[in-house]
Length: 397
Image (cartoon, rainbow, N blue to C red; front, top):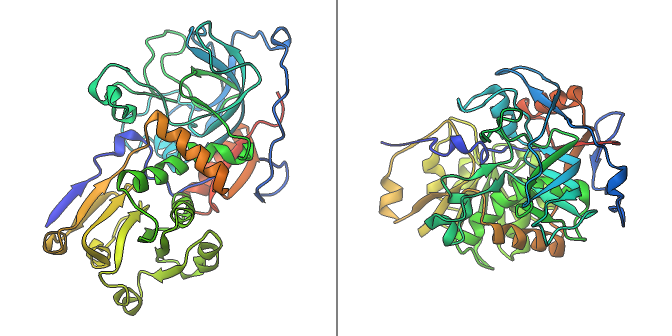
């Protein structure tokens, strides 16, 4: 038997079964915008408070509560943002629960952030006050290692994440994420949001979007390829859209037969219920590429390997507790099993441009950002009851 443990779990990201404009009333689906950023912002009229308001977990498995902190002084290469919204990812839940043993508390989650630039450091040239930007899971790298020099900053061993990275500062010992009213972050990793993307839908693109975009690019998936998306949730519904808009023959493969209509709405040509042996057999050795977004256990991976043509690839961005399988099909058909993690700085820009041009957007459920609703969002994610991303929105500042 081949046994592959969850080696990427410490990244705190890829297992998103995921999530994410607001309402003070009941839950609702939305594709509406948050409005346009102001043409000008008067810096003198901004809050001068020396503390930022946020929402944090104070202990493992603890509830999100109000939190405030004194931020690190704005660096020359940083910007200060007024946070408009932040998506809620399954990995936020894992971090709050400390499922991976790496969380530090108080912990301010959130890595699908959209905000308006309110202040810029002295060396910042490309971003201006009033611009709307998005911030994802990664907010920095060392810029000098081999991985950074070859343009693969996401592989940098010293990368900085939007939260839970040590800072060395006494008042703010760790980076704090987007469950907040304001934040400071690297200007380089604050990406201008293209005009064609509704602001309230932009945040999830920085995590669920880039997580499912990169596998197609890295594995050189091309127009006309027969592609199967394993799992149809927060990641899966994004992957289907990318594959379909790239011109692939796109199938959704899931245990949930009730998701067929929604899969077709997002561009799937075909739909296979993975527990239907006859349906699976009809597609034996016909797929060029499979992308797994599965994060649950108990998967019989041999059933999926059997769907692949010889010399084809199964790539996983989901993080199941373990992967266990017999290697016969993998060896006999010269298959490749690989993973993918985030993306380089330049690839994030390409992904955002593609989404704006082809209207690839998440389906979200929205709540006003506060501690009570943050807990509601995490609870709904834990119960796998989100269709398909959660977003917390700051109503007013």
